[in-house]
Every structure is written in structure tokens, then in C-alpha cells.
Amino acid sequence: MSTPGIDRTLEQMKPLTREVVDSPGGNFQVEGGGFADALRGSLERINGLQSLSGEMSRAFQAGEPGVALHDVMIASQKAGIAFEMGVQVRNRLVNAYKDVMNMQI
Image 1 (cartoon, rainbow, N blue to C red):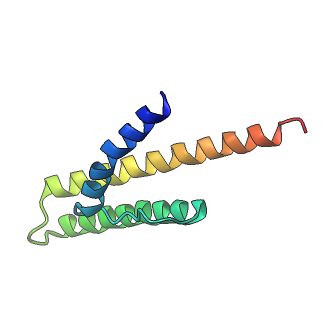
Image 2 (image 1 turned 120 degrees about the vertical axis):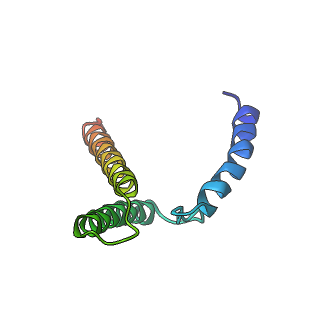
């Protein structure tokens, strides 16, 4: 893809990014920051989703009013998908680290 093509694609993505950031549960930070900050934020969001899923599951099992089964299942699926994404990112980081360490100098 040429540079103008990349620029055009990035311009098309900016409104979508703002839409995701402004959506409920979209507490993403778009501002500059380091890779470690982005990784730490992602891990905290994964942990938050898992905690929310556990709390909703316990509330449903306790019979608390206002906690529907479909909400519990959706929270559980979100937490599972986020965890799998975290595992895949970790695997790719480990592979990249191994590739860098195996490079000849």
C-alpha cells in the first residue's frame, strides 16, 4: 500500500477510533504513551472484565434481582475473549523476543 493509501486509511479509521473510545466500556486511552503503559492498561481492562464477569455470576447465583442470565453470559464471553486476546499478544511478544535474541550481530 502506498503512503497516500495508508494516510487515507488512517483518516478513515480516526472517526471509528473516536466512536469506540466514546462507547460504553470503551475506556481506552488514545493519547501518546509508552508500550508498557498500553500493555499495562490492556491487562487492567482484561482483569476488570474478568472481575465483572465473576461478580455478575455470583450475583446471578445468589438470585439478586436485576441480574439476567443473558447479561451474565455476555460478560463471561467478553472476559473469555479478552483473556484469549491477552494470551495471543503474550505469545507474539515472546516469539518476537526470541527472534530478536537469535539475530546475528
